[in-house]
Image (cartoon, rainbow, N blue to C red; front, top):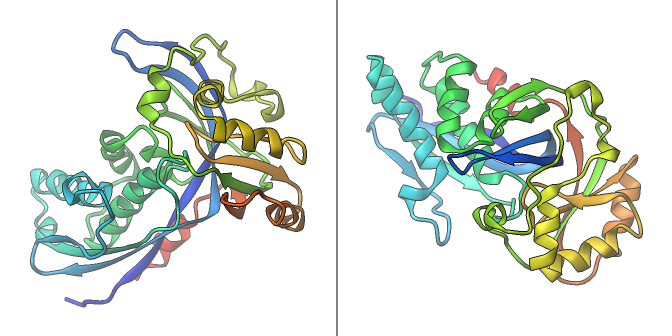
Length: 289
């Protein structure tokens, strides 16, 4: 068995808008959102081994291996395959990650990592599970994992699991984050979170007329986000992605985004990236021989 490492992208996503339509009796929120990928993200390197062990060679600070979505995704795929009597699942793997996406930023880094592992090991272990199966497994790891598995920009409904392909304009974005992290759980538990935005359908979507309901709750509890957002909107259309703390500002050219990046206040994390309607992971999986 080769010890060759294969490299896979684990891209960030943006929620171009996020509407909370209500709360179910089980506590989960009904929502509508529009996902788009970015040409920026983590990189995951994976090598198949004969030991049947799943090894994370680059532990993430303050995250136990048992809680790491990289490991959880690999174990979930292996367990599912063993239960379906496919002997290839006895293979193990060594995983390395080059982490650039911030935790608690709303860019979907952990969900993207999980999806990349599911798709990459499905190919490297020669399991041939369908995308539908992988998306179902991904949903067990997080509501955002299926959109990364399927690899296309999507209008999402329900708790985020009902996906319809979408083709939003592929703008350039300046993504910026103040020096804070935000708990998704805390945002959805906030009394300030609107929970009654009327539902829209895919044909009605005009992103510019939509909003992020979570932003309302976050700016009231995190002045760092409120202050940076107030600064950004003076220069370009800007809003929060997901439950924050990252904000994105929209531009038609890369040069415009880079120009504003140079003006950002000190201490603000940032990067410039292109919106993509197909995940770069799709081509990377196809390219594996």
